[in-house]
Amino acid sequence: MSLRLSLLCRTGPWAFQSRSIVVPFRFVCVKTRQQNQTSEDTEMAATKATLVYTIYRALSYGLSPLLYLHLRWRKILGLEHQLRWPERLGRASLPRPPGQLLWFHAVSLGEGVAAIPVIKECIRKKPELNILMTTTTASAFEVIKNRLPCEVIYQFAPIDTPNAVDAFLGYWKPNAIVLVESELWPNLIMDASRKGITLALINARMSTKSFKRWSRPWLLPLISLMLSKFSMIIPLSTMQAVNFQLLLAPPSIIKSSGDLKFVVEEFVSEEEMRSIEDLKVQLACRKVWMASSIHKGEEEVILAVHEVLIQEHPDLVTIIVPRYTHHGQQIGHKLQKEGQYVALRSQGHKITPGTNIYVVDTLGELRHLYRITPIAVIGGSFLPGFTGHNISEAAAAGCAVLTGQHVGHFSSMISEMQQLNPLSVLQVSGQVELQEALEVVFRDKKVLEARREAAKQAYHCLSRGTVTRVWNLLDSQLLKHALS
Image (cartoon, rainbow, N blue to C red; front, side, top):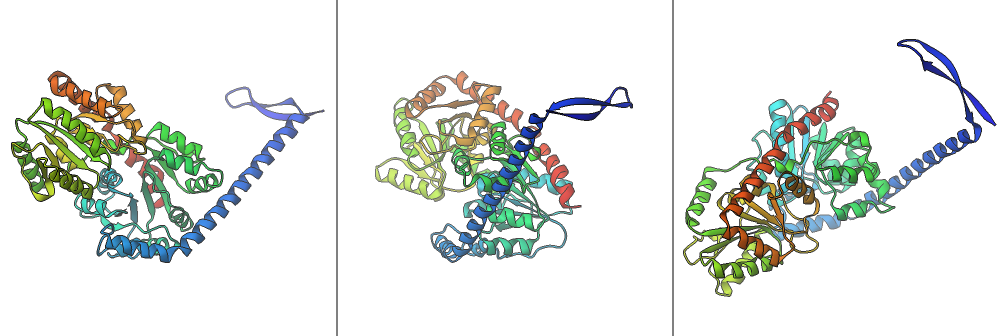
C-alpha cells in the first residue's frame, strides 16, 4: 500500500509545477509514530523537570530559616560582610535609580574580574543604562569594589531561596540579567523567566563534576528546562559548548566569542605601584620564582622544590601566594617556628639578604606581583581533586608559566596557548618534574626568555577582540529585546 503526495516543484526562477511522488504507507506510519513518541518524550521530560523544580523550591523554602542561621554563623566566622550580609537575603542597601537596569552576577573574584571589561564596554556604549553588579563572596567584594566604575551599583547576590530571590528581583526590577560562568540557580532562573526578565550566560562553563551531576536522569530535565530560559549562552570554549548541548541547551542560543579570562585589565593605585616597585628593588640581584594560588597541601610540594633549588642557588627567593590569606598566615607561622627566614607581606616585612621565602597573605595583588617574577607556577593544580586557576594574568605579565596536571576547565585555555606556541605553558606531573623544569630555566637564560616571550605572545593573540565580540552579542541578542 502506498500514498501519492503532490508537491510543488520549482522549474525556473519563478515558475512552479505540480509533481507527484509515491511514498510507502508503512514509512508514513513509522514516521508518524516516531513524531508521536518524540512528543510524548518531550511532555514527559517537561513534567519531570517541573516536578524536580517543585521539590527544589519547596526544600529551599523550608530550609530558609536554617540558611539564615548559616549566614549568621558565616558572619561570625568572618566569611560574610559584617555590615552588608543582609543583602544575601535580598535586602538592598542602596536605592534603585530610575530607568532601565542591567544586572551582572558573578560568584567570586575571578569571575567578577572577568566581567568588568564587559561592564565598562556597556557603560561606554549605553551610558544611560543603569548597571548592577553582584558577587557572592566577601573576598571578591573587597577587591572588586575598588575596580568597578563609580557608576556601577555593587551589592551581594541573594541566596537561592524563594523569598530572597523574590525580594531582590522585586526591588531591583532588572530588564536583563547576565550571569557569568556557572551561576545556574533554579529559583533565580525560573523566577526571572516568570517575570519576563531576559537572561544570558557569558563565559559559560560546566566543571566535570557539575556536568556529571546535571547529567543524572532525574536532574537532566531540570537543567534542560533552566537552560531553555536563556536567550543566549556564550561558552568559553568549544568543549564547553558541546557540554551545554549535551545538557540539552537549545543549539540556536549557543554563541562563541572567546574566553574573557584572557582579558587582563590593569588596575593599580599609586600606593600599590609604590609597594610593588619597592618590592622589585628588594628582589634586585636575587633569583626569583613565584608559586601562586596555592591550595592547602600544595605548599608541601613548593617547599620541597625550594629546599632542593636553594642548594644550588643560595640567593633564591621563593614567593608563595596562597589562594586564601589565612592559609598564607598558617604557612608563615609554621615556617617561622621551624627557624626559616620567611617574610609575611601582611606584616610589612622587608626582604633582607637572609630572606629566602616571601609569603603574600594579602588580597587583590596577584596580577601586579607577576611583574616582579620571571617564573610563575600556577597552583590549584598539583593534587587530585583540584581544578586549576587562571594562567592568563601570569602570561600577560611575561612570566614563564608552569602548572600542574589537575586544571579542570582551564585545560582549554592551556591547550589554546600551547597550540599557538608549545613553549607558552609547561604542564608538569608533580614535584620531581617541577623541580627539573625550574632547574632548566634557572640554568639557561635563553630557555627562560623563550618561554616568557611565548607566553606573552600567546596571551596577546588570544585576548584580542574578545570583549568587543561579547558586547556585540549582548547588544544584538539580549539588550535589543530586553530594552525595547
